[in-house]
Each structure stands twice: as C-alpha cells, then as structure tokens.
Length: 240
Image (cartoon, rainbow, N blue to C red; front, side):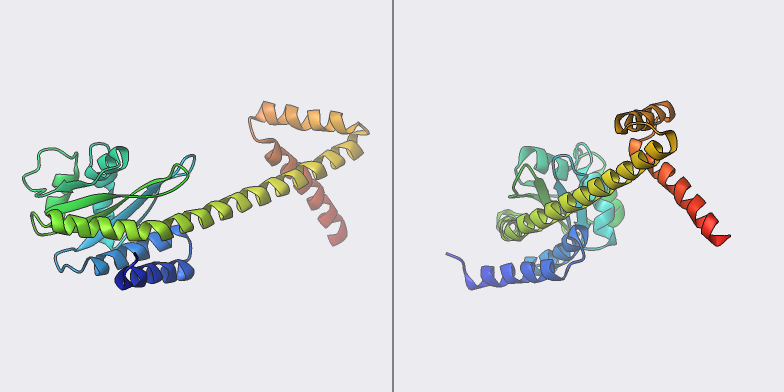
C-alpha cells in the first residue's frame, strides 16, 4: 500500500519531470531532491548514472562536488560501477581507510567526504542505473540509513522509467527526422546528377556511391555538396 509520504515523493518526482529541460537536467534536479528527501544533515551530495544499450551514459549530480566524485565512483573498480554490474547496494563506510574501490577513496579524501552508498535503480528495457549518496561522516550508511537510500531509489525508479521512455521516443523521432532529411537530400542530388549527365536514376546513385567511397565520406555529405553547389550557382545567377 502506498503511504502518503510515498505519494508525495512520487508527485514531487513527476513535477520535476514535467518542468525539466531534458533527461540530464531531470537527473540533476532529481539528485538535489533526493538529498532533501534523505532527511539527514550528513548527506551532502548525490549522483545518478544511467546506462542504456546503444546509448551513451547519462548522469546528473546534485552539485559540483558530487560531479567530481561521480567519475571515480563509476570508473572501473569504483563502488558505483560495482553496484551497476552486481545489481546490489554497495556501501563504503570510511573512504579514508578504504584500500579498494579504485580512485574513489583518494578523491573522497580530497573532497572531505568519508562514506557513501551506491544503490541500484529498477529500470526497464535493459537500462541500468545507480543512485549514490555521499557524506562527510564515516559509517553513516548503517542498515537504517541504507534502507532509506534504497527506498528513495525505489520511489524514484518509476518516474525514471517514464523519463527514459520519453527520452527514447524523442531520440527515435530525431533519428527519423534525420533519416527523412537525408533521404530528401540524396533524392535531390540524384535528380541534379541525372539532369547534368543525362543518365538514369541508378547511374546517378552509383556516381554518388563512387564519390562517397573515394572520399571516404557518407553519401549524404556528398549529396549535400551537390545540392549546395547547384544552390550557390542559382543564387549567384539571380544576384547578377
């Protein structure tokens, strides 16, 4: 059963999504809100990282210090990387005495932070993610505080799934638009070559492919050059 507090958190997450300017902005704002929801004065930062098949990693941080910590946290051997690959929560009780976790302990010491918790997010369609909390206090993430971190991650996961769906749809729409524009440019170039050389459509396409292979550039770029050259000549003619 959803409690009133959980419902309030869900509403807050959704409000952020409605107002955010893109996925990265949403993750950054969500990280700030997660720190506030944690309710502990000793929690001083949060990072969220999402990995998706065939897409670049996307991240958001609550502040500049969290952003500096995120790099070693999610690098090879870091606690965030371990949480993603193992799909389990990872806690560093005292980074200043930690002898593992890659470059994270050294960075944490420089930044004045001692403990952290990396908690997996429950996402869809092969996506993986982790929410990390940082603290200047050693041993902060004992069982009770770790459960709080895991609860926040669970509450945020639902809206994150929605955010990823929206971002995925926008990505597909952009790719479709680019494909349509590319097809239009190629079709125009083929028509121009046919007119200039008095050749068939297939022969014009082969000319584009030959130039593309010779120059080692995409056929769309070759086509765009053909169209641009004709457009420039037409423009010059009318200017005269």
